[in-house]
Amino acid sequence: MYRLLRPLLFLQQPEAIHYRAMRALQQVCRFAAGRALLRRLFCLKHPTLERTLWGIRFPNPVGLGAGFDKDARWTNELACLGFGFVEIGTLTPRPQPGNPRPRLFRLPADQALINRMGFNNGGAEIAATRLRLAKKSKGPLIIIGGNIGKNKDTANEQATHDYEAAFRALQDVVDYFVVNVSSPNTPGLRALQDREPLTALLHALKKLNAEYAMPKPILLKIAPDLSEPQLDDIIAIVQETGIDGIVATNTTIGRSGLNTASREISDIGAGGLSGKPLRERATEVIRYIYKQSAGQIPMIAVGGIFSAEDALEKLQAGASLVQVYTGFIYEGPGIARKICKGILKADSSK
Image (cartoon, helix red, strand yellow):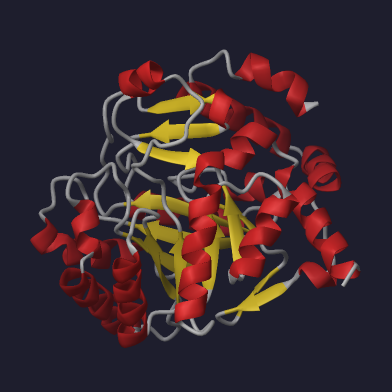
């Protein structure tokens, strides 16, 4: 059904149809019968799919990556589509509009997206309020990751204060945190992946986390464009600071090997590329980290996951959980169930 609808949806501007589609999902979920129908169509429960990581029981290993529900507007609705968890954000301590539109572009020939959203969000405090209300509602609850970043106008030297402020705002309403220093759409942000500033930032967040009665797992989201020596530094930093894992990977600034015409790519301009072209590189990063760390660093895989085969590739490379984003746009609301069915089938054939 979605394959028939997709050409019509793709006639509309990407950011506009995103919000229209989610408003439609909200309307369906207003009614108990609507929520029940969605769960029957898209949710798949089975003990074999369950994963326990960082003391959290995930009903299945397929999550929705950060960027789709930046402001925690639709967490209960997305739970009805079969995801095992949803990562909100990236959230900054203060609201910001992000980059000028248009800032989201489809590349259908490559099953990819380019975005330069720029951390557009309403601020961590407002998202936290929404999550508290969602937990009180009748909708199904879901595991929530909180992806946090710094405001665009905050200098890198002051970035730790922004991450700490966003952390405090969300600490009681999310199940784990993801520190985003790898988006290509905030000027200078990726410099925070360098060894000295990143070590200082993660140490500060670990110290802050220890002040709470219920500390939350802290993960680091990394870029796919890091070299092996840089990945070695990331591994060393994760081990030194004692954070809980890695999300691999964010979008890439690379443009090699695309089927889309080079003129069209040039006209789009700057932004992070996601989707099918990222699949192989994201898997390489996961496999490298797993091998170099002797499997001691838990990882959430994201990048080019469209099918059960794509997800299994990431899991076999060393990831514990997977996330989709661009695959959700191209494959539709049945993607989580489809991947879960494939994982079950693979497990049963062992």
